[in-house]
Length: 304
Image (cartoon, rainbow, N blue to C red; front, side, top):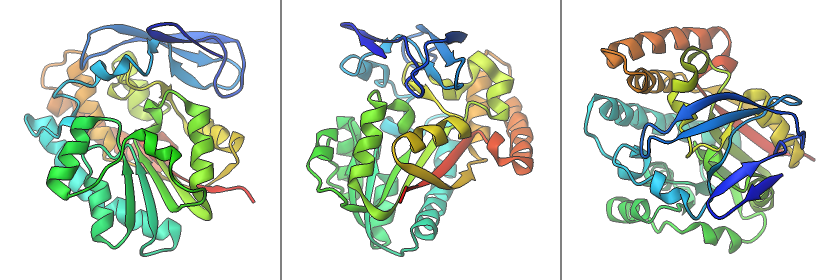
């Protein structure tokens, strides 16, 4: 159960299983915007992990208003941001190929939710897909329009699409940001065609690098990340809403960027070098067991 007061979201029952045996796992700091601290909680019954007392949807916007939040600002300043952009360029092609492989289509109707500055949506349009893109941040929508000619819609447009409108729905590092978790999954199920695929990429809080860095792990990213998934808990959540997991793919490059940021968060000297070293170890760990990858891509289909 979630209790919303004027400014924050307090959770006293697990959003996944409804259990009330909740414990504080750690306290994390918002290193990007505010410097505020937030408790990360875990359900003792099912293991689902979440951030407690996050700002409500009407208040959270200011926590994104920083040039460091590059999915919206698109800044290339600094070595870490430069690496992010190079990796993104490579990953755009990989994501496009993954969509084609998992959907068994070369083109079709695609909905990209949380499109940010529009790079993925533009890539898929160039490959012949009919794309609808949703983005809450107005500045990011303007960037997508100016650079790619994309007509990105606000989140209210999700209510305007007909049921079964899309062959593929993608959320690339978006699900962890969404306050209304159950409502989102129900909406996705309604918008997806019967044989369509839902592709969700999220950080993995059971990864090697999450264990190494603990409260400094950059992918906890409080308070912007409300939910912290593992392969087990996201599969349980999907099943709760009528989906089966069809495939899962590691995102090994994420460990390098996340580890460099994590080293920076804990005040390390030479965070670039130390982060790269940890990234190598994390990458090797994921080779042996992909469930330990820093982030994961999950492919879901509707239960029949």
